[in-house]
Amino acid sequence: MNNENKYQVGIIGGGLAGLTLAIQMANAGYSCVLFEKNKYPFHKVCGEYVSIESWNFLERLGLNLSEMNLPQIKKLNVSAPSGKLLQHKLDLGGFGISRYLLDSKLAEIAKNKGVTSLDDCKVNDVKYDGKQFTIESSQGNFTCEICVGAWGKKSNMDTKLVRAFTLKDKTEKNYVGIKYHINIDFPNDLIELHNFENGYCGISKIEDNKYCLCYLTDSENLKRYNGDIKQMEKEVLMKNPFLKEYFTEAKFLFKEPLAISQIKIGYKNAVDNNILMLGDSAGNIAPLSGNGMSMAMRSSFVLNQLLVDYFNKKITKKELENKYEAFWKTHFKKRVEFSKFLQKLLKNKSLTNFAITVLKVFPFLRNAVVKLTHGESF
Image (cartoon, rainbow, N blue to C red):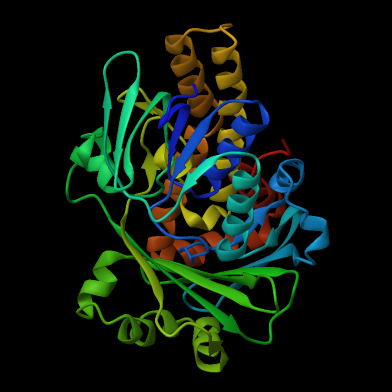
């Protein structure tokens, strides 16, 4: 499609899912436009630990991870609110990299590959006439044969499209995510997950001798302290002795914490309003699994293969939608639901203490839990 503002694929959201799909589409020779509401580079609320299963995939896209001297993470510590500690070796493991660096590098690759990348561009609406989509944005209207939703954990587009999960019981729990970059004396090869009342906090190394400290908490915790993040951290998080030490001793590099609210954990549907949903837009896995980014990239890898088959007329659009939905339900839905179960488990201090005690005694159970939250290289 060579007409101005007319593309074969339109991708709404320039995070890992959207960027990696755009690069693959460009590599396959298809015209692609990518919309991102923020301007690269920018920070995102994220644990910034990437499962090693995504390493080869990112290098194939042109990101030379092996030359970036990134921390390789092979150990996991998990603590209960009381301070009881579980230690575990990660067979697969991961690496640390900030989203500020990772997303901007991928955005640069996408532009060099010929993707029309529109950052600082807000999408206001998407309309489908049965043949093509019209994407209405702050930089004009665009038409495309395929529309992909990669806008992440929450967006005004979810409400605009009246997606089913937005209509669920309003009493269902919402979560708040908070992220900092810090300097601290901490092992390079370790990721820690520390539980506190109605939440948990992760810490691990990223690039340039910096560390990501990111936590997820029940929104009720923040409401209890009238939205005062610092007060909540003092009164709730720092009751865990590990977190008290880190919050007291670390040098915080952001002027203000980075925050995102109204996060819901669970499966959302991989196809909605004929839009193919990618990454967190299809299902939001609990951050404690440490695997949301790899799921986003794996789903882009699979969707790219299906789109190539569609454009080569090997499958119809309906078959494309059905195959992609089936992939999500087979490979990711159970993982998302299991993470939701873990999320609820960790909200109960007594159950968390008990679970950590049991997992310390039975290593095979630890391995099973880790395996349920991680995948294989692709």
